[in-house]
Length: 270
Length: 247
Ligand SMILES: Nc1ncnc2c1ncn2[C@@H]1O[C@H](COP(=O)(O)OP(=O)(O)OP(=O)(O)O)[C@@H](O)[C@H]1O
Ligand SMILES: [Mg+2]
Image (cartoon, rainbow over all chains, first blue to last red):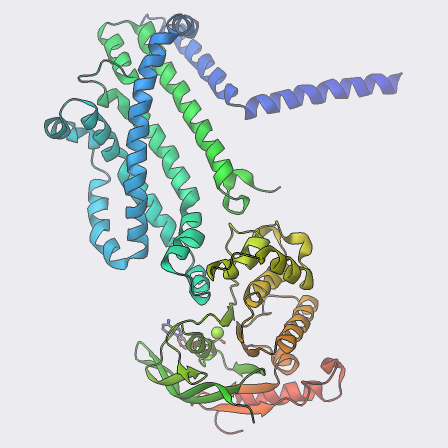
């Protein structure tokens, strides 16, 4: 009997521990701890500028259609910006990584532009590309492309010279060298570059959508702000966070599918 | 006498005004294995790079079958000391790569499976390099070198990172594969014992650029290590490497 109850007790204990572990591992934990922190602030500050999380959640659930529309518009812009940045940034980064002359010519320029506050260029883009989607997307590209190029370039430079020698010894053509060596080698860097880009572009929506926008989650937050409707504003902020979680998870999934175990930080064998 | 397969004629190489090789002459015959030994920094790796076509001599010519070596050739395979196994390729993918690079489409899987089996790697086909032991990694690199049926195999210190037992196993494999394939083997080693086990001829690169060639009396002996005189031969060679001028 004693033996039995002890077994039951350890079983329960294991179950609880496993539950906590699974909870801590899950995305949900991040969300819940964020809400708890938020609630604490709400109670401490006791001002209507910080509404309670519950109030905000209820608000989100009440207007899902509108929010979805705004999110959709923003997501399209973000995807376009990231897609174009990839199309330009990856080849440019590779070129700088493999070609010493390109690197020497372009690196100083990149280092010069990299730390500049990119948002400050917004008036120029508005002037050149109008107030529509073009200037918004170009602003976001301008914000993320330099770190994308630099991380790809660093990825190429980190390839050990012996790998290139191996490819040479098997008489690989230039195309084969990209297919078998350079692209698989920089794939993890591309993913970490994408992760950073998603974060920055979502944050920059606040600026990109603050003019001449009708739909967009950045616009939504700003207009709520100007109306001093803080529940609506925090609703928008919360939704950006949720969109971020969604995109990061999507990216993790893509990475798990496309990066082989050998170079995948997410698939280490124990 | 067989025809000369590889010949180096009055070859000199300079790196930043430092002369590394000076007027080196060397001829190698087809189907024979050669051990290249010499002091560290004497230019052994440089010779392999020249024969492989990675490096052009500043003076003189390197030719294979009478054709000047200008670039790496398909039939030459190089086993690097660093192995150069790509971390994103499984064992099977790595061994298949040379065939794929040649544009071969059919029968690759079978050839790979066969070779992996021969080298005792059949269980590891789906593993990545970091999931293998040092000796297994070395065998994978060897398989990748052999799959394309090269007529010339170059190896730079192929067993230097291995423990004694694994080393002897790999030496046996290399010896067996080279003899069976009738490929020419030119390998560099710091290990004089390895030179006597694997090299039918032993080439000693001297500092003045001369190469002293010796026939190895133990090459065709079974279990050479257990023969009387094996270690004396090694000691003699070690002395010859150290000697400045004459033999
Ligand atoms: N790329 C290079 N640039 C400048 N010097 C070099 C280069 N490669 C080799 N050397 C020099 O050439 C000399 C011979 O080098 P090599 O690598 O051929 O020697 P080695 O006989 O293989 O030596 P070890 O036994 O230590 O591997 C060395 O003094 C080395 O410093
Ligand atoms: Mg060397």
